[in-house]
Length: 462
Image (cartoon, rainbow, N blue to C red; front, side, top):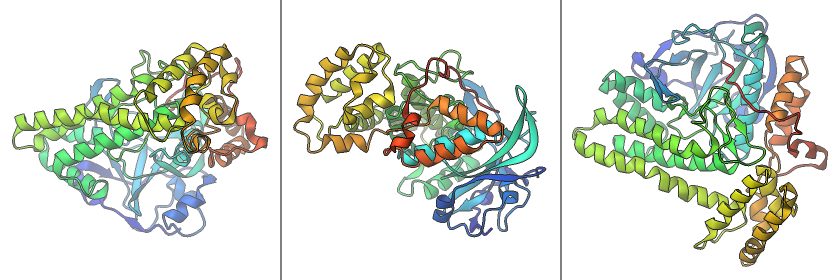
């Protein structure tokens, strides 16, 4: 295989990473390869399992593990880093990383490996997010390793090849700020501006750009009923992409306090808390950047204003996307009341989030309500409002997906793959590639879970 690698991160100061190759595995087998993404990246040649397993390091690659720190559920951890991932290099400005590729100096007593379930989950969910228009890391390939990893039980090992605009996190800045390493911080600022925000001017400009990127990202998450599950600062990407699909999940029945992550005992990262947590994470980035500012007092004032601007920016993006979800393109005062009223009624009636919004254009939204009259009384005002819109049904159908990666379908896919059946995985990938269109033969994938199929908790997989 021919990867046109560049290695700009590897050219940064050596204390930002540790260079080392992936650890080879026993018998790699390719189970998925994203040919369309490979073509976008100008990767040539037939896919080779040995490359995506780390057994063969491509020419021009400069493999390394990145170091970073982070707040995990609000608690400071001074050193984290790529404990089970190796960055091979960059292709077309995108990182190519092997996730589950063996131990590194940052493994913290872990084995550096991944098991098949989380690899397939990230592949499916990240590719769905891309198809749905959400900024996200991508999946280029998945391989099984022929080895067993020990978690709650012996499980088949696997490696994901992840593509990202970069893997630089808020926690990367925190690591060097905590060590008062201003030269490393400056190198990171310059690198991020050149790579992601070329119009930004210095630390202030970078902070403003990240604030806006995160505001748009979280609004898009909310519009899909997506719950990241582990919004630690080391999982908050400077690029504004969704990164690290660990205990993530999508809501079935809508409720603003929904959470799934088994490690989020107190709901810190519940659905409705995500905007506030994003703002909190951005405040940590601002604090880290202070060391680069000659006038600290003036910088505190300016940075505080920038971080406080997150919520208005988020609300603007949230309003825009939810207006589209109910078919309104020309927003008027009071329109958001329609959204909040609908969501309140959905929560009270256990209405499915995805199918309710899709049902607004399909004519069956009321079927999602325990008490359909709760929808009917809302719909009177809504229908009167959208009567003046040019083509509300078309707008809704391109904003509200017909199908999402339902949690129970993802679990079903994983259990089948563990037994050697990758059919459900392949089917989900195919259907979710066009989430706004759904063939009659695939409508079962849009159905909410039965009582017995409901997924109550999701797990990180590390």
